[in-house]
Length: 113
Length: 114
Image (cartoon, rainbow over the protein chains, first blue to last red):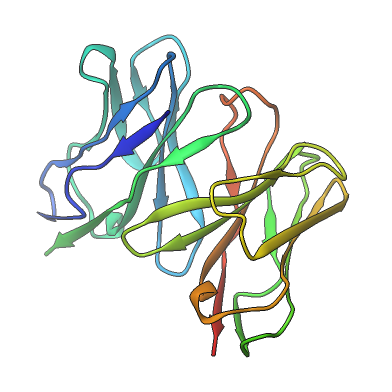
């Protein structure tokens, strides 16, 4: 069965600092991987996705993530945090059949001035 | 851009009431989903549908039912609302089966059952 873990339910960074949000997954087949962002009182918005091909994936708002099969990880990074990045971030995995997405518990990112 | 619209942002209902949550998507997506979101638990799948009049149970279907009479509309029904169904409900849609197509979410309905 698929599962997703996100290390750290809450991460705080200073404005301009590196953002690193961790995601590890388990899957019995090569997975499809996604990062979503949720701003207060809104739905989830797709940041980026990995399906096949290049393992370094670039998304919106300057975020990127790298698929590392050997580490079963898909960590999200951004070189320089902005105040507008404060939100909750969800990692999700799909094994490619039945549209069965599994979401991690989420990481709340705070950006300090 | 795909637009997924949930009819209500906030709802307050009484215990025992029948509650309808409506969701409409405008991109001719085959697949539609209902999730509930609770702090610390992430998103949990209630039901999904891959075609009109088709439905599949998700991880937590108890106490819920769904209806999909038209491709663009997917309704979640709480037959007899209970306080433990107080939650944020998120509707989503996607284009193709196979898992590589991302989910597109609505803005959510925050339901309070008193």
